[in-house]
Image (cartoon, rainbow, N blue to C red; front, side, top):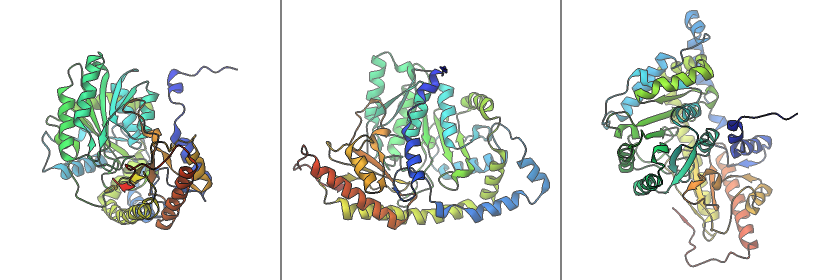
Length: 438
């Protein structure tokens, strides 16, 4: 019997992350440097138990937590989040402070990203994003029938001049009214590990405002990794550079900084988007998991979140240095291999010689699996339009494995790379091929 599927069901198909996650979970002996899971050993069991006891200390509060919740979310948790956002950016904010009504809770930040995109985009509309960018958001855009166009980036984030060039080309082609969003992961980007510089944050907001000629262009600031800083100083959010508070959308989550199993995300929205987003949200979930929000509110009230963030920062800092040290030890002798050194987050971005493809249908991916290690092919992280897809890149996550397993995985990848280099007759080291950290 033929089953008719919707166009959106077809658009949603073929997403690579599910297959990669399945491979990682199906083979526990495989050293997965692929999926961006958090460290199983540092999940906050005791802190969550203490918060649970606090929720259930009074029958009335326990009953309220087990009831349906409001579509925007549990007000005390929203107030806690708002206070933290304001405190983090208070010395730098240009525009008016957002209000409680502008804070919306969701089932993880991915739900918020989907709701925002669905609220402002029709099929054929355009999102401008760094090239590479967060591959799951690319799937969201594809699912909605949208177009993701990649904009050039470097070690300081999206290049404002490249963004303006893209906007100018789209205007010339008559497609500027189609541009609805600029999407950025400004803190320790997934996948590149890059932190967008302070100057570029302000420049991108200014460009979004100036080019909103045929309709509003919003900037999504995906701040999922802001708390995961291991080196350097925190810098103000993109929201702080928004002079009237009408352009920037902040998407946050407790999945990386506390627990992904609780699925508590949040957004700080321009006031004009709160109604449309909540209307869509109410039709989808009739209020995100209310119990989880009560639990997370207790975590914040009791200072358990700060304690946990301090602990995981120490753990992830060690893991990051294990990966970078292993790259220096095993990869520096490989011609044409380079990697970025992040200041936080969960990822290291690596680039191989141009003729050594890293895709899941190529020899390196298969050889890496034979060596017992899994990575994310970088080509999955590139939009289909705009900047050219680099097929010689990979995303490596240090979040899950122990320092020793990370070291073993990096050594295994070095063996796989070296094997493919030696068997690739078209590759000959050039004078410009210098292995380095970038």
